[in-house]
Image (cartoon, rainbow, N blue to C red; front, side, top):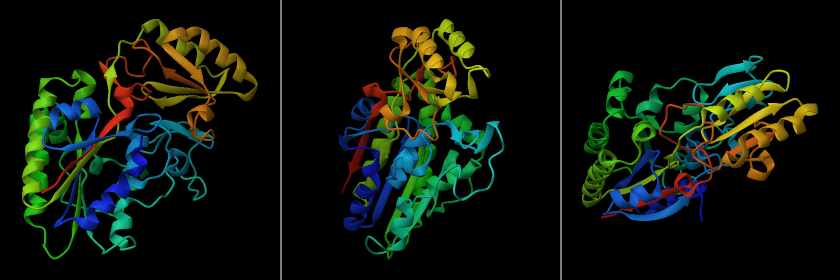
Length: 355
């Protein structure tokens, strides 16, 4: 099954034959199954998310076509030389401060689909616009790397308003539709447009799953996309990952904390959601792996980054992959989470509405 790395090529191919241009809905946290139920007017195919199936890795891969080994972001929290960094803000969580060094940046520079489209290298140059919403408010190199090459549509939506919308899927989609309409209404017909918009369903799904409010919002988005298609725009949509129910076991969380100690590990653990890793001192690797395997039991598979295709220089050498709802996720208050290998985490939609 194709992965998210094919998205840039699919978008560029649609640009070549689009009547006015292409609108891309980047829907965070939407599973393939939920999209099939919520978008009856779209033609939907199935793609595979990244490993880990988490936003920090998946959005970069979807917008550059590069794997984690190339763009350098294997999860939400990962290693850069002697530091542990948080991808979304670039914050150093532990270890020595990250030096400004082009040879080992927090996020490695890879051309985005926007840079490829605006360069004219793959066809006539187009105007690329991004409605970043939450992404536009993020500091650090990750968001810049995701949106590089696209001009911002307008002033960023205030964070308080985005928080209000994220709690109400109908309100959220209403805001997205208004933002897109504002750009399309002012678009010059003489130049092809690629418009990308971030749709943050992820925050709501973490607490509520794919409930009736999400399905109603998806149908609302389907109607909006159908209307744009009827007006001559090609509309595409895809997500970064899906989510699954979780019920983390406090005893397993306690065991993780006890194993992730400074005597055995040179940095605190990293990873994302339902894939987490430890950074044992080289001489303590076998001890840490054996202890973690015994502690997690059938709630996880304990493996290595190489076996998952992750860059070993940026991940810990002992990786735990969730195998049950009991897995000790970093935030035990969540009802739904992602990161691991369940089909509802990995299977993501690529949808198209055409006139």
